[in-house]
Length: 373
Ligand SMILES: [Zn+2]
Ligand SMILES: [Zn+2]
Image (cartoon, rainbow, N blue to C red; front, side, top):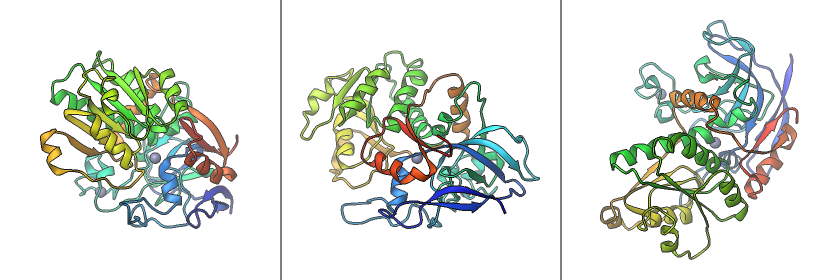
């Protein structure tokens, strides 16, 4: 039987990932076997390795989803080439380039979420690639249904960089569409959007704000906040209108003066979501503003309930995105709306180092796991 190389989480951190030789699966029915071109390394992979999120200051969520278990090949940002298809596959051929939609729910026709293209909201069963199915930190990846393979043109979209569309770009795209709906709801044309955390997701968010939202809202002002100077330098290069270095005990009014209205931002997208960034996000909002929580860093905040009413603000969680949104995003990326920033590539054998470097804040944009550097 032929085998392939994959980095697997066998035990929680600090135990390193193990490079294993796994049997190459044969796709059956509607399944598709992908030869992986690149697997993006996401912060969620760190939580997966560390066996959970900090839900409050006291408790740890022990697993990401029911059904998730070790050993598993992480990697939910996957681009690749179709290697083999099952006998029930349509609209997809061997050698097609694809981005994998990883946020798979039960997939049943009678599920009111999955049947309407909202698998990321499925309450019946979570079957995400990289958690439930083996993911992109390996040479091959078996996708359970061809509908989760979104084709792209390799002449228009770099096949390695394309992997980030599956999570960091998709998640931020969802947040930006939500932000646009909020601004329309309030009839706001001169808007400020604050972005907290200019890592892999932040860079994608900034590019999509500039190339997708700014053409719709010409007076949009984008204010980027981070605690690392180097990330703010990147934000400036990528076209942020203002940058703010986040420090302990910040003067919030000085942050607000960077917004179009000195009362604050209309929408804040928090790509970190820990107690200090969520608190900063709320403090930055204007009346009627929305805090969109995208990151999954963890922790809890003390929220005075009357403030929700008196300041008329909302907090909303964004969990990745839908399959139709990924298809729309791939089209936008083919037209050049996003240029993923790839810091470095790691071999499958170096997956543990990649996760450690990400945790240490050493990665600008995204890093990738590849089988050949
Ligand atoms: Zn992710
Ligand atoms: Zn479902």
